Image 1: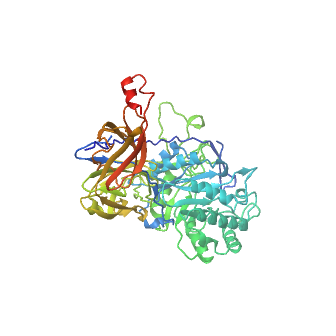
Image 2: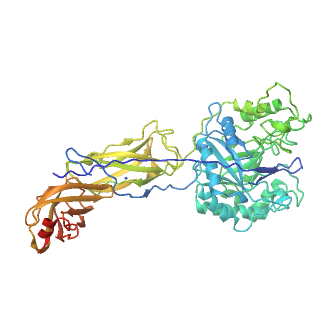
Image 3: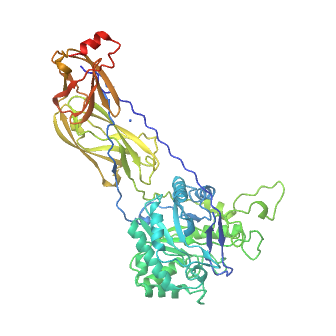
Length: 620
């Protein structure tokens, strides 16, 4: 019996990331009622006996694709705590995660900015990967860049560039939250002059461009300055601006997926958290009333992407402002009483860390280094003001945003034909091309939906302690053995808990057949007696196997049991006889007897030159 096919496979995987640190500056108008700001980025032998066959001969790429559509974040477990960050770098993301995911919290939010001169795919993918690992959901505000004293108005086609770029990124969660610019009812945010019709049209085109690329884009409006006066061209009253937007693009607000609100406690960012209505921490509720009056026909999830009080502490102490302890109590009251509506998805106060004028009085982080005017030798101050510590100490919900479970079969496949009674150990390697980390919550399994009993295949679990991040790979080992001949349909699927990955399956038809029998046939030039010992080699993509075989004078071998060869697959066969030129053939083998006819072997006179006795035997 032939000694066939033993395979060993080693899988090596790696994943690395390196997050760049951009330099960002922020500019704010001097008008106190104006809350718009600018963030600018400047920077794979055979063996006999009882057989266990490890096979990885063929690779069949197969990708599971998601069904695109946003999900209402209000129907999932949600942690509404968030924070506005200035720089999308690990230090700030770490602090943000500590803040929003404290006291039972998980998957809080961060509002961040991407400027059109900072559309670096590699950098932002590293940022998004970091946010996913820290369980932070990004609310991405897109921006142009400053020209002079104002932000440039988006150019025609800008929406398509944004859609292409944002769609190129692998987002942390299914919903891809995008805020379309900032406070356009301030002229400095829109080329120097307010233009409601222009913004409405840009918003409309950007929504269409994003949705055309991927329906998972969850589009939010720019937050508006609710306290701005109606003083063109520098300012426009929000109510009038919204009305004019709806006139320019009727039904524009029904095209939104959610509402971004800048619910600041005015006047002067020092209003009471108990105040209600326009220009308060409840501005969002007033805005909803306005939208319904303008024809809004659905309940929009609300994202308070900017809010907050100014505190006295800063580069220079401002005694006209409430101190940080008082502001901490304002925040506590607002989170416990004002922002309790189920319509509110996230609150991201402004701002985690700002060390310069004019936002040092908003900063949750204390001043550091040379900008700290008050220094007392030997006294260590907490790193953050009391609003940070007070809110971090509030009980929070453990969020569980919807993430896409997606995989690609990158190596391996079930074979279309196998031999009855033989056991095959088949590795299938899947790459995590989704958003979730496998086994982070429920266990991931490769399940047999159909044909398992016929072929003796059982479900395979990903070990509980194993985690596979997006981009990582894992190899599931299937054991296949059947004594029943026939054709069987098999369906496989990856599942997490009880949920199938994107409701897609890997389908195969496997035929169980009789073993392959080989019979070698060859002739020698000039009708020489072909009897003797030959070296028989089988070559596969995984290596070579050698065996000595005995041929009769007519050049035929006895039947060779090659049950380890897969029926209906092709292999390279080589026959070697001393002092004759090697013969090779490529042939597909089938169940039953297969004749390997190597034809006529030619004498190798050169090899026999120094062996006169053999040389003479080669002559006619």
